[in-house]
Length: 431
Image (cartoon, rainbow, N blue to C red; front, side, top):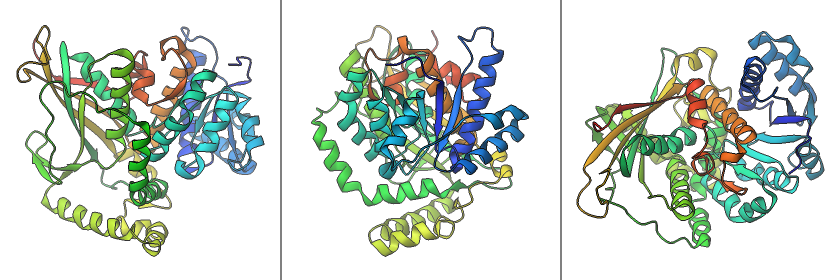
């Protein structure tokens, strides 16, 4: 892979709603590298997108927010996802592309292809299992041959979930065999909302469930072995006494991302696989009823073309105000935070995990600021920096990886801890 490139990081889709916050976070990371005496060298970066004036506006906004006028002079690379030549030209100028152009099922593959062809690493923040697994099936071998690392789902909620399972495993002296996680969003007086790009991805994902199942069959995977007590499947709604509220299965990509990581670690590093269940804590019975009604209508509307058009056109109405075309306000972002609590079980050190019931329990937590546009940029940028500066700790060869598979031997968790996404142990067996 070429090393003499003008930019370490390029934010592609910098003028999008999420992209603008990623730009700010890259600027912070570069500033830290400049002031850190232990840093390897200054961090160089640029922004890329279709419209120069919009890119310049994003740089001006970042300069104003961060109080660094010099950001206005950062390089703007004009690049269109539908123009392969412009994609190639962009990739040839950077070491790692931070791809913020979604929905990825429509716009992600050309970027992955261009990165691999031009020897450029790539991270994205996709929460779309069909895209993530499809890229692995189609491009893993090519990426490995080129020594290119393509790491998808590097935002909330997959980075906290995937790395959280690994953190839980590393904190247990023994063998971790199963983990259940519970996501909880905490809102301030202004409430919380998200940009409707995430809403659109969910609509298309629900519509395409059959194709996802067909895609997974193409891998020809053997079932992962179940070590220890089999993790029981929860119902569609249940009360969790530890969380003191009702919970439902989490509909995001976490379960699929964690499973990909566990498969990689088991098949390539001979590590004991961890069973995983992902859930969302939703509050009281009133919240459950509202979610069930919303979920039913969402499912019905995704079944026909007209319904999907209505969902996409009126996100605020159909999501009870949670997804909007404007995205969250500054006050909403400032008042919102997240936590993911992990309840793990396994076997103490020296005990055979193939015999008897699990004997030890552990509880850990990952918590952080507003998930969509504060925590996600932090996670994405730190993932990119880790690829840039810790290649000796990455898997031996390039490929298309989940975050845990790529970063299990790196200091990503420590990096996240320093930047406000905190990994902590709530309780664990006494030594």
